[in-house]
Image (cartoon, rainbow, N blue to C red; front, side, top):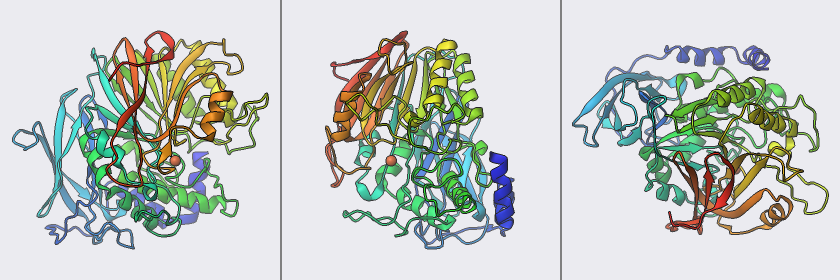
Length: 517
Ligand SMILES: [Fe+2]
């Protein structure tokens, strides 16, 4: 499939594709700006770090003195700009341990992705950038433990679905106060729709986005949010996307809009993927090639956890009316599906974590004998889910925990090898995390929650408030705390723990935890 896409794409766009390819190789057509100076702060989008390894992390920023400029160029000239960076052991940069220089090119929107190496494992570091006379905010990050190291504890957060017009990102301000090793973002980092909402956070551009300039402006608008910047600056993140980074409910090369031709949609997917890469702390392996971009990958935390960060959009079969057991239908694509099962069976970590897009537990909304299932989550791809669950059993994968976004609610489920037989084996546990803002203020319960709990005995909890999820792991148990805010359409909401759950290592299943965090 990717080759077909690439041929179609290059045939259609020619020179534009070649320009990005040149920038990828480290070249730029643009002249150098040897001695840049700025009247306005170019670090309006903040800083970020991501994808920790035992010896390094990715450091990210993007130069944009005028972040919402209508041409999508962030107020930058068409020049190659030298940017320097420092990594220190202390917040005041008295003990700088690494430093270097990079080039921000107009082909990649003057974004900067530095892959720092030769750091020490399992350590906290501080980083910053300098361009000309301007210094960036300081970010804090943390390397992963050495491979195989005996890591006793791990604390991470996961989030999804941050629709800017729908509310304030207060949950991020609270999450920034936590003590976390890592944050997973599971998708819907931006929304592609037009201007919306009533709280003064309407989308820019005001129309649905299609062009590279459009996607750059939209990402920039989201990134200017102070709470989001704070959360990025506090922890390393590992990001993946769902649909709205491109278009609602797209599948592989197919738009949900029949009026959009496959060629037009792939062109759109290419610019959306490029803008996503430009705004995220991702490694070189994720540099887009036309409409293709490798995003699935694995992060290891010593002998305690492995994170399989999935891409459930780029390779999936198109949605069909549910009930299709066609075995050729796929959620992850053959290559990623094999990579996932091979990786989990080779894993020697206590916990095998899946960073997943859409609900994987069967989620029936019909309390009667029939089933009403979504066609966009794993329940619309039953053969693919069965292959994964059967593979987990056959390969004796233990302690699989799936963390999921997309649904704008919190839910906890035991994953059954056969959802029609509740006495069948539990192959893992799913923690579905609610949205940061999507859906507005939210409530404890709603119609879908009532239907889900009545129809799916493997589901143990439902809540439709907004927030983030905190997970604390050791070798004995996994603890999940649902951290929720009572409202998002006004600023200043407090945070509280709505419910907590525990999974004991080696004992598939989940229990409610009533002890205080
Ligand atoms: Fe969403």
